[in-house]
Image (cartoon, rainbow, N blue to C red; front, top):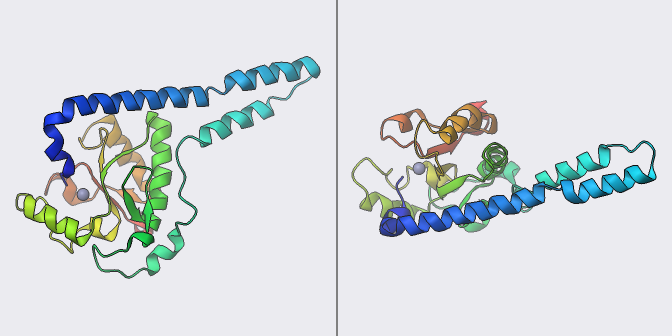
Length: 219
Ligand SMILES: [Zn+2]
């Protein structure tokens, strides 16, 4: 659904610039973290000076570890295995049962969140940045606000949105347009992580940004 960003559209150009600057700063930071070749390299050189037949293994492991420290991991207190037992009405999931996403102020049901972290990491590996999330879990009240503010058919009635179950996310960063590399990558890969683009969202209403977690049923 089109969300809160609509109201900031007059400021979108400078904001986009700032966001891009942030992305580039992030990439640079990652590049230097990933580029662990420097310390690793000098140590490997030291090792090879001391030993006749140095193994490449320590350097490989360091590289892998620094890459793995990139995309964030599911917080330890998130319990995806318990999510299916939850029985809250749509839009009534208490905060403590939701799992925060790496993206600020966004959260999902724990099983959807756990799958999202893995999808996010794969996306990060492909595009060099984390997924962009514009909306995720929505309370009943928030859905009611949206429903009243949007044209008919553009927002699910409160109590009927997958956002209210904590298993839907509205994505950005390119995914909001069908046919972009980001959208097509998700089409090809999201299913591996239990996420999918529902059939209705291709046309009725057209919401390329809306993705859902279906768990095992999508496998
Ligand atoms: Zn949505």
